[in-house]
Image (cartoon, rainbow, N blue to C red):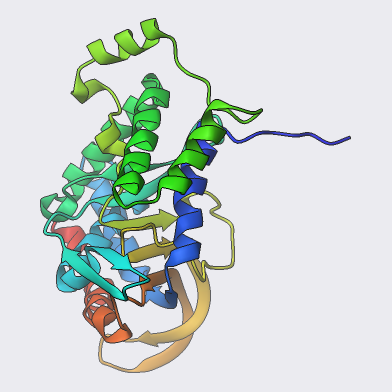
Length: 300
C-alpha cells in the first residue's frame, strides 16, 4: 500500500526557496563547538530571579544577534547575475532573523523575527511569545499565500518568467493544486488588527536564518553540518542540542584539567559569492567572548 500525500501550501513555500538555494548558492559550512556551561548556569540563575521565563532558544538568538553586530557583513542580501558574472551585496542595519517554526499540524513555516538588533533578552522573549500566540490562534494560510505571491512577483521582476508560469500552473491545476480560502474567511482575516494576526511581513525573508534543531529533539547526540542559505540571504546558522563531552576545563587559577563539558554545536553556513572565511572570523571571536564570559545573560 502506498500512502500518497501531495504538497501542501506550507511544503510548496519551503520547497520553492530551498530548491533555489541548492541550485544557485555555493555553500561553505563550519561547525563551531561552544562551551555552553557558563551561559547555561547564568540562564538558570536569571530565570530564578525574573518573572519572564527566558528559553534557551531565545538566549541563542540573542547571542547570534550580538555576533552578527560584530560581523555586519554577514547580515546582507545578494543580487547576482550568473551569465554576466556581476552582482551586488547590500548590508542591512536591521537584523531580521528567519526561523523555522513547527506548527501543530506538523508542517513547518519560516517566521521573520524583525528588528532584533536593539532588543533585550526580555523583549526578544516577549516578541516570540506573541508570535507563538498569533500562530496558535489565527489562520496563517492567507498571509502564507500572500507571501507566495510576493515571491512569484519578485522572480517575475528578475525575468524568471518560465519559473513563475510553471509555479502558477502547479498551483492552479493538478492534484497538488493549492486550494483557495473562501471570501468570508478573507474578510474576517482583514478585519483583525495587525497586532493580533500573522501578516505577510512576519513570513517575509529576513536578513539571516537561524535554525535550532536542538529545540525539536533534545536527546540527540549529533550536530547539523550543513543547511540551506535562503536567497537573497548570505548567511545561516544551525544550532544543535547542548551535549556533554570530554573536554578541557580551566580552573580559577588557570590550571587545566580534563573533564565533562557542555558543548553546543553551531553550524555556520555562508554564501561563498558574498563572503570568505575571514569575513566570519569577527563572528567567531564574538562567540568566544560571549560563551566564555556569560555577560550577555546578565545584560538581559
